[in-house]
Image (cartoon, rainbow, N blue to C red; front, side, top):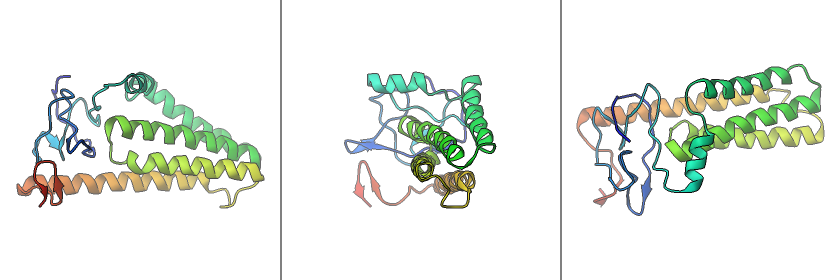
Length: 196
């Protein structure tokens, strides 16, 4: 993979066997410590606007997820339109049915974000993936008992989880940007030096 253009997507650095996961160019190339204009906290910024680098696809499962999970273009638009369509459909259904449709939409969004975090480490997906999957389980349980326990506000909770995830990513981005501008490395454990 060639790194060509800078973006502003924030990703979370991962550590495997005591060292950073890599610079996105190859599975063997370790990332360097610190940040710069071309790096987002230890993971390089690559591709087009908003695209996070994928981690190396070193297993058949990871390659399968990369083929299945559309990240950009019309397939991604179609996926999100289907989720939005499920939200619209749920508005016209009676109590147990709309909760089941909402649960399907929440599960679709949660699966997307959980897989995206596993493969790309986008910061907001750390919260939205598990949050939406838990909300899907909650809505499915509500469908099982036949009524909403939160007065039909499940879709609002979905949007609140999204806002919290995007707020987390914005704070993560600002913290990493400020650390890069000051020329200091973030405190804590580093791969080479242990705790500082």
